[in-house]
Image (cartoon, rainbow, N blue to C red; front, side):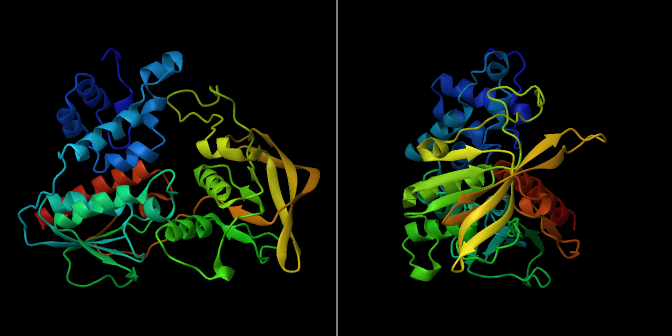
Amino acid sequence: MDCGVPFCHWACPIANKQPEWQDALYKGKWRKAYEILSSTCDFPEFTGRICPAPCEKSCVLKLSCDQPVTIRENEVAIVEAAFREGYIQPIIPVRNGKKVAVIGAGPAGLVVANQLNQKGYTVTIFDKDEAPGGLLRFGIPNFKLDKNVIDRRMSILEAEGILFEMGVEVDLNRLPEGFDAYCVCTGTPTARDLPIPGRELKGIYLALDMLAQQNRILEGQTFPKDKLVNAKGKKVLVIGGGDTGSDCIGTSVRQGAVSVLQIEIMPKPPVDHNPATPWPQWPIVFKTTSSHEEGCSRRWCLTSNQFIGKNGKVSGVEVEEVEWAPSPEGGRPVMTPTGKKEVIEVDMVLLAMGFLKPEHPKYAENVFMAGDADTGASLVVRAMAGGRTASAAIDSYLSNK
């Protein structure tokens, strides 16, 4: 590799060794590439599909000529070859006699369980949902992450001795008894709402109301007609400009929406390069996903003032243009309403404005935390990194106890 100094490794939350495994891949050494990749990443088949790839944003070729190496695609190619060629087989470790409970079967909890299981701990994962995966399974649409990919890995983890207790709601003030240590990986279950006049109208949903239900429907579950969150034949408004909003767009299009509009309170970012966020900052630039390309309109600098209804159902949203100016004290810019208001006609509103960082009780010394439950909402790859950190801390605690 002729990178000079490769920044991709430095930018990766889980410290993947991209130059090393890509060099092995370039030389046709697929098994070696997988061994290097899996030494730092527990589940490359997840990150290779859904990670926003901070590595590529820091790639030498990205910084020099805006043409980064296709690191994420190479990653998923390696792990798929590993499954296809049989490199990935269950390995049952020798047990050390100690038990650990993991609360939450999302990416952080799965990494904690995997790491500790490999070290010989007997690990039980508890989760309130009917199947493991967390937002990987119930938040991310199938067109981005097919659930067979999750099931394939869960079969490996089960064969290696990890115990799954699904459909179990754990009270964090009264953790299950009989374990030497615990790791709380419950994510950020509370979405940010929009408490403006008219919020009680029918047809206004949190993003996960749609996304989780659609994923369950694709798994064969059924819901009463009055409980369905379906965009068929409707004018849909998505409030929130991030990835969750994009997932709502793609799902609405697949359900047969008449039109989809996405609005964002922040200004439209520059295309390709943003001088306000130079490397090594995360580049805040205009992003077009496959869902956007499938059909939607987008607008920026709009705040929502009130929902308007007809016969108890939402029929419009009053929005107002805003302006942003630098704060005299620094930090977040100052937003100023302009008084330019309009009403957008809608039949359905999807709120995709992020999630609130949860508050936790004071835990005993043998209780650890990882992922979004610890940091607040972030990337799957950062949750996985947190899982590795927490598992190392648990191992150190129990080894020295």
